[in-house]
Length: 345
Ligand SMILES: Nc1nc2c(c(=O)[nH]1)N[C@H]1C(S)=C(S)[C@@H](COP(=O)(O)O)O[C@H]1N2
Ligand SMILES: [Mo]
Image (cartoon, rainbow, N blue to C red):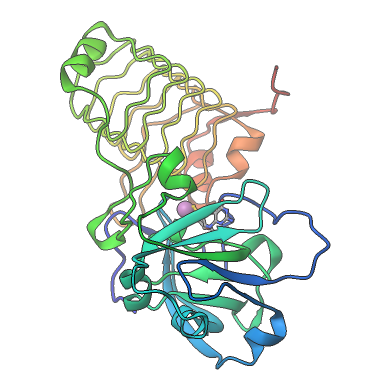
């Protein structure tokens, strides 16, 4: 276990195990099985009984979600992945392993086979001494120590051995980093846009609908920026001038707005999970409909809070997602919380 949190992670509220991604497995009446397929001498399907006859062990592990919450010393019981692979007899050409969920989108994630073994990837059946709750991947999920939690596939159904890597769902669809080491802060792949094009777009202040990962906009003057519907995960807007910018419907997960001027910015229906507003001016800013899971407006350690008052608008649904100390900070500054409106369209 680590003595310290990896960079830019915070502890989840005590006793809380946040729910991320898919909420339930595929509806299927067939009994649960786990199959090992691909580059093995003979594909093998385990029933619960088969799995129970393998040696069980305890895994104490630190969980680090890419949206910045961590749980230290989580306790799982189950089976080491290496035990299951031993039984399946994998071929020497197998170099990668893909983990596939029993879910509607056949959610997956992958690892180099060597990393899966060296890190001690684990198939968990219980959490905190109780059967793993369904929403957290019960009856069985993968747990990968030493990687962001998106590598830990819930409702594990198939383990596929491969010669070449097959990118997982988040890695392929959302630009999540395929290596995912929290200590190296490998959250997202680097910027994906030509720097000249980006400079031009920012120069005219128009990035509506663009996908720009890991945008570097520290201290830039971007007032009245039009960024509606843009996908700008992991952006750095520290100390940026963003007065009157429009981020409605934008995906700004993990964006750093610390000490930025966000006066009169609209964040309607934006994804702000893991975003940071400490020291930012958010007077007259609008957050109604925004997704605020793990959003920071106030940091206890530094005591730095957003500049906020009764002109800052939230709505009930978005406000409820905030961690208690965040909500309390905002409430003591008299923010306005309006009723949640039904979404149009
Ligand atoms: N099947 C499946 N597994 C998944 C996901 C998902 O969407 N579907 N999301 C991943 C992500 S991003 C995280 S952080 C963890 C969340 O697990 P939890 O909901 O138990 O906290 O599951 C991972 N495994
Ligand atoms: Mo995650």
